[in-house]
Length: 194
Image (cartoon, rainbow, N blue to C red):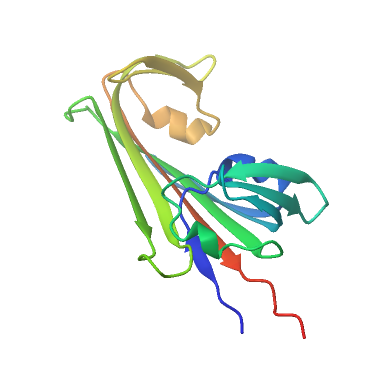
């Protein structure tokens, strides 16, 4: 019998370079807006568990061994076993929209959420966060296609690669950027030996 569960914020997302990974990037563009999204899927197997420190020793599909700590948000940690397969799915997306002439408040908003399995269920959950920033375009350099945007906390400069998109941006406009990321970890218990 195969069980699959999700585990939130297992700090495995930070250790993902050691996993065997596959990924997909998608991009979309229309006048005044650009969006990109990336999904990364990674796989490993639990080799050992230190219950005292909540440290998992994991082995990626290419044999790389690494450790990850399962924080207190990982419920039912005691259900994890050596030999269980760990599948991580990480998604991040960025969308940027041009607001001609401005008019929005320069601001940053953050939101985050997590959901985990109830006590007594297999380890489970998912974690996500969203950041939206609105900034004023304070300079545009046609020679380099450099745009300078002053946000609520800092000023950034970047090159707009698409010349058609660059032509739409003027000093006094605003850019609104929204970044979203989510991570889910599925644990598949090792098949019972016969």
